[in-house]
Each structure stands twice: as structure tokens, then as C-alpha cells.
Amino acid sequence: MRKNADDFTPFLYLEDGDFNKYCDDIENTARWGGQLEVLALAKAKQVPVDIIQHEGPDIKICEDEYPNKTPLKLA
Image (cartoon, one colour):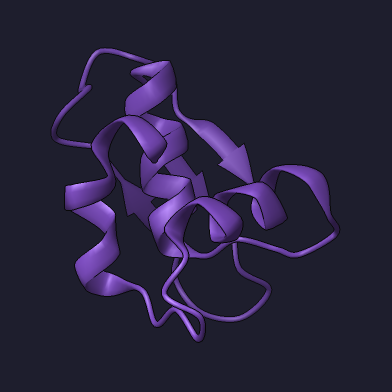
């Protein structure tokens, strides 16, 4: 996310406006990321990600971008 901050900052609500602190918190604390972090993971690893939900359909990230790769499954 740090390398492509312009792709992510418009979609984040940053209480203190500090994007680097936000990234530090995601990397170094128990704070859980959301869809933006999963998207960053998929792009960094160049693999689709399937989020398996207890109720509801799977959420598929980057499925069209990496169609020939086995998805990373997160639950």
C-alpha cells in the first residue's frame, strides 16, 4: 500500500491524516485490515484472493486479473 498510496488513500478515513501511521498499525499491531488491505495483498502476491464467509457468498478479489492462478483463500 505504501508503494501505491495514491490508489488507497482516497478510500480510507484517516483520523489523523497519517497514511504511514495507518500502514504501521496494520503491519505491527493486531489491527485488522479490510478490503483495501486484501486488494494490496492480492496485487503484491499477484494472486486472486477468495474471502470465505460464514454466511453469504465468497468475495473474490482480483479473480479477473489473475485468472490462471489458484486463489489464496481467507476465512
